Image (cartoon, rainbow, N blue to C red):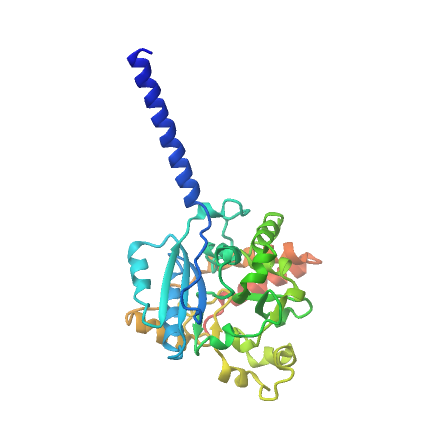
Length: 362
């Protein structure tokens, strides 16, 4: 074989091997990681999801979680993250202490390529990282259980009571959304996973399939949890485990929270009784304390926020045009899910949403 031909052949082989290696490495990087089981068998295992937009509020949640921890508890905290810069990653490490382990797991949107419409965010108060909630049973398959927490929360007490809650052979534990009590729905901001049960029944795969088959919802994950994990698979936990900041005494009575959450508990008769035992406050929906400083429990949120940054100030609220567009998006989504009977009912829904969004702090 002539020398020039041999040289060309060698170069082609090297190039081919190089391209194969690059494709292999890229493929490995796009795989969902499997997290090894923690060395401490008695640890309370917690997972958050976040991105660069939600990372400041995650820090507040972490601050409250750690400050209100019992001295005998050991927390293993995993943060599933996308788009975090080096500075933010370093700041998250500062929450680590002798009895709190912090592990930030960097993920990429390309890992979601098999999840339908993963690039679309139609709800401004939801992070795209929320989609990785589908993968918790797969990522943590080496664990027995894990507690998922949203970032827009405050933790007021040690969470071991939630973590050790008896799921009674159910797949997950969650808080039922009682204002939807004509059908079984639950909030996905606090979920206690029985990982073994979820893994054995391919819950991650079923959640992805449900989303890929869906054409109407613009929520990121919640409707698909409802579809895959119905009433027969979910243990309703006490309201104090995920106390919605938007709930007031009127709602507590109107939708009969007493019977829903505390039917056999004679010590709970009002929302005030629940608040004395509240472990987690959840700022669900569109009004967050970092924008609306006078909503319920905002003062507590700002207490922890100022421990992180004493100069932190209230962020700019949405303007009228932004609220109009958001109210329209909510109404369109509601119509797809509920199918309003008339144009009037659709307009009434829009007006309610717009009024809520534009109403100033209480």
